[in-house]
Length: 114
Image (cartoon, rainbow, N blue to C red; front, side, top):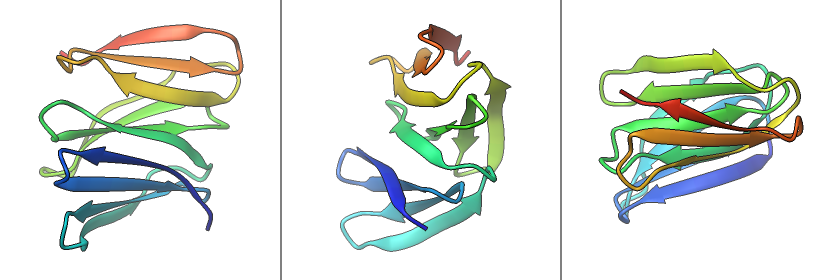
């Protein structure tokens, strides 16, 4: 699988997203793998980590789907199809209350995390 995206949290966590829908989470700087999970059958195009380091936002490109994963409890917080075409970008607001996504459908969407 091809590495498509990466995000880092305070030099403590690194999340990598791959072309096969798998993400991997590593503790830094040791590089210890914490989790690897397949969350989609389609490529992950972007990853983001919220301001507390607890939630990972993952964008499944072909599905136009936003996936939010709480890695410590290993549960989905959100799994929503939001874009008609590929979802390409996702980012948290500085306070972690919103996630913004953008896709090939030329739309920007805001998602509440509360």
